[in-house]
Image (tube, rainbow, N blue to C red; front, side, top):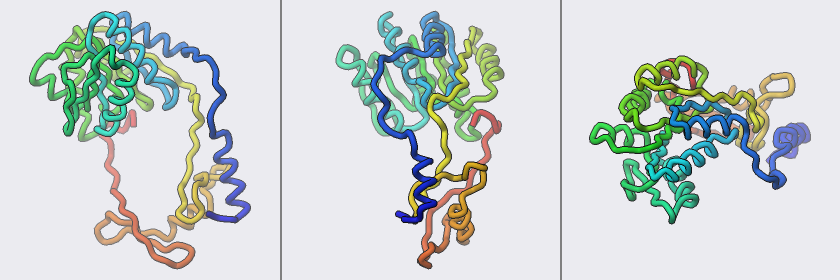
Length: 271
């Protein structure tokens, strides 16, 4: 870690305010109340809110309301790791009163449970095999619908979900929500209510983990890239395979890091 006073000062400023917040009574935000009310009323609902705004709270309350009606719910995620995390989270909240299951490519636990966590691909595949009845279908990270390779999975999931099920779709980054909600209404022949939260409750800061200086902001107060970051990237180059970064540190020692060439998204929006 650097002893450079300039680096220490900008790091301190970059990390300011990070810590454990003071405990206070929870009060639901208006957009959360609106979304929960929409789902309880049986409307397909698309929630677009920044990361940290509280979309998971909406999902939890919607699941609770669904279970109270004696219906089942499924929570889908784009990643196995995220499905495993959500499985543990939902099990801690709803078990043992309600059974919670998990369906991924690697694990199958209580697939007929009251609440099932699944990867979106597995949920889509199940729809092709049978019309399993869920009162509530939650599609987390629904902006994956714009992904060039995986987007059709979300499209098919929305199209194939029975009209008797209520869709709750969550995203932090959909910009063309009006277009998407209009398409959902056209393929499902039912209203899709859109709930928008624009203000970011958790400040977004862009940082860089420097191998020598540790965490630091990516840019200074005037928007200029920090000099040490520029110098670090200025020393880099790709090897012949295009998959590894090569460079030298300030001490002259060489290093390599595995990278990946980026891919362009299908629609260029909602990413």
